[in-house]
View 1 (cartoon, helix red, strand yellow):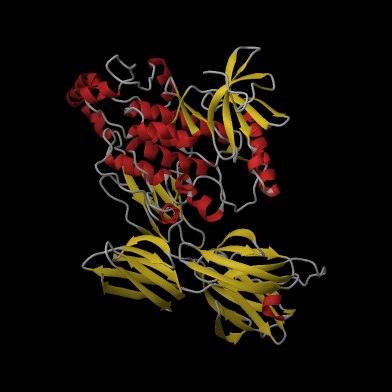
View 2 (cartoon, helix red, strand yellow):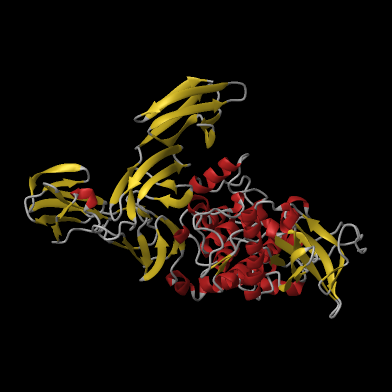
Length: 632
């Protein structure tokens, strides 16, 4: 590569000799350089600070640049691009000197690169899994795993790069609740709450591998809103025809788990995901295997990414892929087992993949005393395995797996107790879950521990209020009534007039909350947040239920206020003789008008169905469930 022109790039950066431009973007450029001391080629990333006019944006970008250097310096793994040096040049700005990886980005390889076989793709997946698990072991979450941040070297090995928005366990670059990353590869918790942990990287890796193997995104869409909606609410798309060489039921089992909406339902590690994926790979046959076997490009063929035989040690943690030449030995062994020792084979427990579901979901599952995640979940089980399902507020269930039997959907029975509600002084009226009860304290009530409860006691100007989560009960407590009414009595009176108050969400669904322009993240029903005393402008939103509202609310020092959101209504949309895409308040819902349903918040909404030739629009004032049917 020729030396750059003086008018475009510097000849040197620090002690490094610049050889040319590798790539450029809006925020900076990457240069090819050489270290003259050791004759090593490297890549140098340079920021374009002149493009950052806003001081806050400039400061944030510099912090991310520094974060990439700090984080990469903690990592030492062959699957992660190494950082050699960091510095700053007058009239140029800060720079990072990093490992130069001759090859091409994975996104380009997926889009228009040479065809890769299953072994080569598994090699890439295994290398990325090992790199991410290494970072996670160091307490580092990448937060932007995508094909564009992966380089494939000339030997076929992947290199993970760009830790600019990575997060360490003991440090935060951005405010909690702020979404960072690339939407198409983001996890549901990144989208909804802006929170990340290693399981978020695992989800992003699952999206990447799904696309690598199938050539399709698991959550396709023509707009960002559609993609985000599907990531949060819908399962990955079914691939038709199935990916050659992978069992369809194995594909579904693996990707349903790695792309689970709840982080706790995903695999224990990135390498565990790739191992289970490899178990679903089947014998492709001699012709297909020969085409997939690593080889160099011949004279007649175009350039091909070469996977050298010795590089396959990167998948040593994966089960060996079956080869046709082993089947005669397998057949012989089966014959011996059938004639001489078949009785032993019959006694080996047969493993089956079973779906474990509970009503309500979210129960903790243990298999033979070992934790196995939360429901719903798919597990590999054998006859004789003992399952135990536990959920706070509900009676536990035990179940023994039997050969040939499929576990039923488990319905958990709530724990119901008789509780005595008492107060000091006695004689208080009782409101339980916004419903007044006959009688005064002491008062006996039937208490369902499977539900959350709100208890309010009032006697004259005195009162007390308590919130109970599922599994909690009064348990013989005697509640002290205090002056100031039931709501004010939730907290002790503040000695400091500047002490924070609290805000409690009541209603049927979670909302994203912003107070005075500050993002407070996702707030679930019954959850509380602290706010300083005074008047606050609150912005509430829920993309899942197409809800948006702005309110002004006053918070008193040391006291609690309630913020109530409306109820939900189910709306079914059907058009005839054709169907179209359904939009609510201008947003794509991701469904068609084919009798599909969605849940909207009570209130006014504009519903639009866009067919191939016509558009139908209705304004709805929802106060209950609706079924719409109209010609299109």
